[in-house]
Every structure is written in structure tokens, then in C-alpha cells.
Amino acid sequence: MAASERISTNDARILEVLQRDGRRPYADLGADVGMSGPSAHERVKKLEAKGVITGYAALVDPAAVGLGIVGFSWITQAPGTAATDLTDDFAAIPEIEECYHISGEADYLLKIRARDTADFERVLRLVQGTRHVFTTQTDIVLSSGFERRPFRLSAETGVRNGT
Image (cartoon, rainbow, N blue to C red):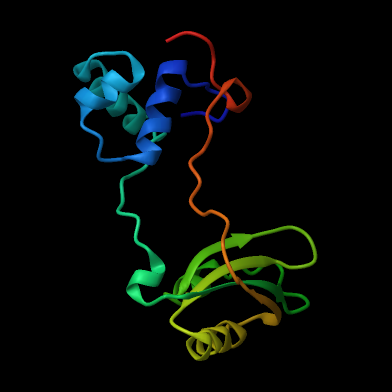
């Protein structure tokens, strides 16, 4: 789907439901948004074909699988290496959950999950040892108000009127 293309109100409602429950049966999904199950199924397939829906996944509680520590690290590259993309280097470290190339004083922002502070220190040393990493600044999360918040889809986010 092109960045300038807008989605319909019905599709936005479908996406809002699926973000909360990606395993919702099509009959229930249709009822939730005021259409038949087959119509909801057809719209979901079109959203998948357009690349709006990119996949489905189980949401796992990190603490339940022993990953009780989360932190964010701001990474600054060594002088003269800003043109070098470090994404693949960071992707090789499995504890890095998210990686963003950013503007500002730092070059990357990493979200890291670990078992405990000793494990977090091990991961941070891997990050610090990555080629072209000059400095890191890291904050450990004490608590999270919310995570994985569903996108709110409305007229402000590109929904056109109609079906």
C-alpha cells in the first residue's frame, strides 16, 4: 500500500480489532465491525495482499520466559563512521529486541531484554564491542505503563470516509 493511500473506515475497524486479537474468528470479526464473516475475511485478505497486515504472532510475556530486565541504549558511532550501517551487527545480538537508526546526538536506539542485571551487562558489553560503536548511554526500565499499544486508526491517521 502506498504511503499516500488511505484505508477505509471498515478496514480501520478491522485492524483495530485484529491488533487486540489476531486470532479472532472471521464470523466474530465481522460481527464486531458490522459485516458478514465472509466479507470480513475478504477484507483481511486484501489488507494482507496490500502489505497493511504484515503477519501474525503470539505475544509473549518477557518476564514469564525469564527476561525480567529491559533497558534502552543510545549508541553513538565512532567519528567518521556515520555512513556505516550497524543494523546487521546489532541484529546478530539476540537480546536486542528493537533497533532504531535515529537523528539527534545518538545514532541508534536499542531496546534490550535480559534475564537479570549481570546478563544485561554481558549484552551491553557485546554492544560496546560492536565495530564502530563509540559510546553508549543506557537506561534500565523500572516499570512500564504499557507496551505494544495498538495503533489507533482514525481520520487523523489516514482513514478516508466510506467503506
